[in-house]
Length: 358
Image (cartoon, rainbow, N blue to C red; front, side):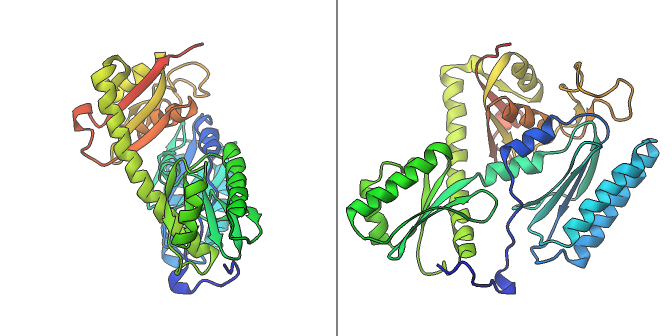
């Protein structure tokens, strides 16, 4: 595979900026008004288009107006940090969305693999739903490319592929067992979905002896993968299909819990929040389009970094956003499902896995 072949303008698809669960966690624990979130859908391009730049400038102007209206004394400093992120983003490739996060302690930007609603959020916490959704839709995964010229192992954690291992070319069972050991060693430290690429005959041979095919997301057929970028896009499609199966599995888990241990299931935003205070979260199921504005449960307690009576204190655009963050931070899983699939649960349900300690 030729990793240096240039992509044509029609096929250009810039990779999202590396997004990790710890990035969401870092933003989730940053509290204190004002936390500025700027979300913008963008067109994939080698450099931000003039139209997208104009929309981004309009969103930044909205931030400026809101900071003025609330008399934020750090307004000038925050706007300088926001302008710096805007300049950097305007000079870089764009993917399907841009998320910028700025506070006195934070200055981050991410290209995202799926569109987001265009909006500005200035609150005591960051609006991280787009990041959590991106992690859920495209988790870090592993791609094993088996070719007559050798076996290449890639880590796919940011929309692109990073080489992490290679075995020399030999089409023997002993060689394929060596490939399997390489795969197993890497996945022991970096678990995630697996995508296989190569000729059907070679992959059949490998699958017949491999001991490391758990969470196999699918195969990528040869022929169209002329570059590493092609392989990255094809593997992303395989993982997306795999995640649709995971969504169905999550709904099955909810049904099973309701029938066999209903005490561990909370339905509706209020019951989910109450359950999270006393139970360890197992899995949170949320309809993709569900939002619930209100007073933040997390910011109402001590140590939030938000002073009572401060502008915007305790009021958030989406309690679901906060709840998703807290479930991820406390070790729970997240499952985004289609709108209408949780109607009987008021669009959100939490499966607990025991009493929370401490």
